[in-house]
Length: 74
Image (cartoon, rainbow, N blue to C red; front, top):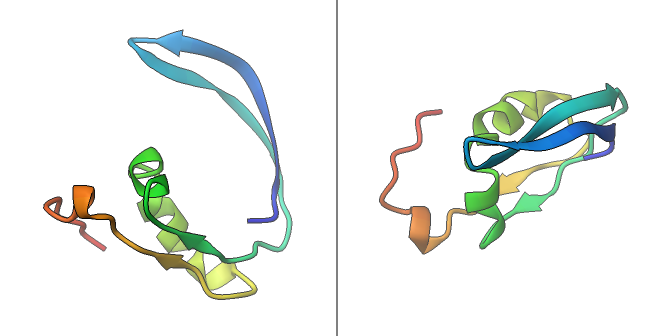
């Protein structure tokens, strides 16, 4: 989306990959998150949607069939 991210202290905890991020702000760009990408960022979608007004172009989130039965509260 345009920001500079650096992953620090990447490790495994309770079966999940965790770590720290160093973020340098920038003008964010929109894009499309769809298909097999959705399950990988399902927990981050509310944050991405909340940042929508700060993007320089449109963002779209297309739900795959595997997530169709989950309720999304926006």
